[in-house]
Image (cartoon, rainbow, N blue to C red):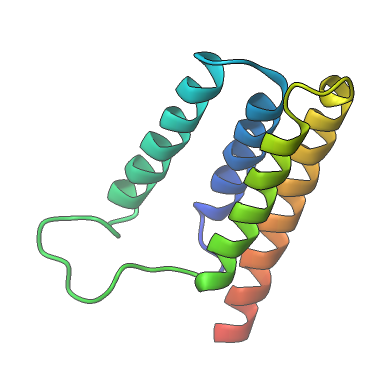
Length: 111
């Protein structure tokens, strides 16, 4: 069973990457904070974060963090360049699709 939270998490991560690539602070900082807040809210909603955790937090693997770091680094490199207005949305779309497919592949491996 695919986790219900992976599609919205992937989508908001893609939007965050786009905003970071295309805008200057404070909007890029606000978007990163909003993404972190969304992740925490999803964790609470799906009972991955609570007072009495009965196991470990559900996570894909360190690969998801590495994937996020690569896309985040690319957004920082594109930021402020003349291509940021078209490369930001393209990078966000690639981030969304790549993250979602990675998480789906992980879940298929666990079944």
